[in-house]
Length: 262
Length: 291
Image 1 (cartoon, helix red, strand yellow):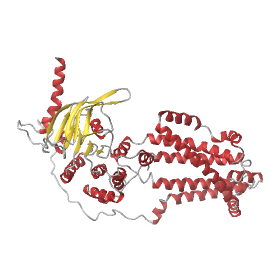
Image 2 (image 1 turned 60 degrees about the horizontal axis):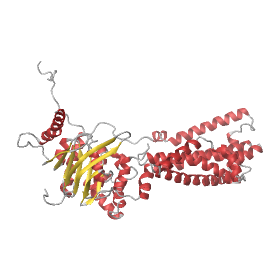
Image 3 (image 1 turned 60 degrees about the vertical axis):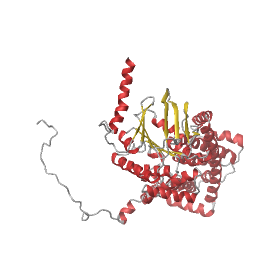
Image 4 (image 1 turned 180 degrees about the vertical axis):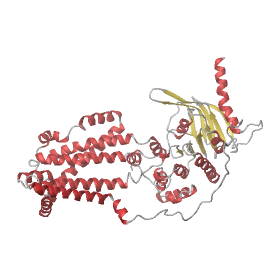
């Protein structure tokens, strides 16, 4: 932990609201957290806790109505290539571009590199995710897991200050999912990139994260931050990490309800 | 039994080793005959030949070339028309007018769609205008067009624009709106400029719809053109395919009338099955956006 060092991403008292057709929904309420260099920071919470909205706000797609978000001390105001989002949806790859073009397009469009350097870097990251022989394939010929690998390769090729992952493995089958988690950790071992990872799966949070932010449901509020070593080993009091997280996420909502009766 | 999940029928477990050869055909090339039968163009050619045969037999049986000439007489008239240069020059004239109308229609459709995508009032305007004018057959506007734009090709181009504009604008606009939000976010995420966003995300993302609009617009324009030439061709300076059909009918050269119709059909087939199909194969089908 980089105690004392200034955080890479600081989120302070952020309240997010969005409009549906007939409601104004508060997604998160006064959420604060700090992400440091090379963190694998996981935002964990039940469905509807506004974790995806929070990630999109960090991405610059939604403006908070209260609070501030700073990346390297600079206020986040709009989307930009220093914060690359990896989505859950398989259709995040542009179907009219091949695997390689999807990555080079991103690098060239953001003025990160010129065409030749972009092609080199694209192949480097395609190789890292083990898809070299599919570089010239169009996305619709790939499986779901391969598409997510390409999306991750694209995100990493941009070498952003922080990679934002919005449940990237949620739409995959269990076997592929587990394999992808392992691959993500292996990639992290290589380059130690900073990642902000949203999930609703406790085992995934424990496995991926080194620091886990727990959010309550509706609207999302911070319940705590927990360290994870990656393995679900029993704590001093005999409970496993995932057991502790489950209790934290579950128990407090019970006490909240009972305190409401008092 | 206390444990209801216990195995009811005891069976030994077993594990197999998988054979690596000796299971007959895994993959073998198809025979020439199978390949030919799979070739759609060949099957359709056979159908055409069969239809031509029926035509020939019926016309001979009818024996009235003024009403229904034989296939061979039509083919001969078509050949003569080609050799004498009448059909090529009529085709050229029609195509020239058609392209002018089509292109102006596309440009206007582009402007309308841009306005409609940029503002809500523009979107309302486009939707209202399309709802009004799309069902209105272009040919119904021709009498008015001749008063407004005179007897030259101006009137015909006006109705062609009307035929193309609404279907293309409607489809393009619908296509833009249906571009997936994820692609939009991807485009914004990589810091595309406004123009880059339109040309690299919106247009390719909406391309299946745009292509449909182009095809419908082309079909409308083509039909409108022939009809307009047929009715008013004499006034519009003549020379088009519709005019050719009209003129040969007046001269009672019925095989040439059929030859003119055949030309219209052939051009339609070529544009639909060669031009648009090629575009489709190189774009949306290759991208897996349309099967």
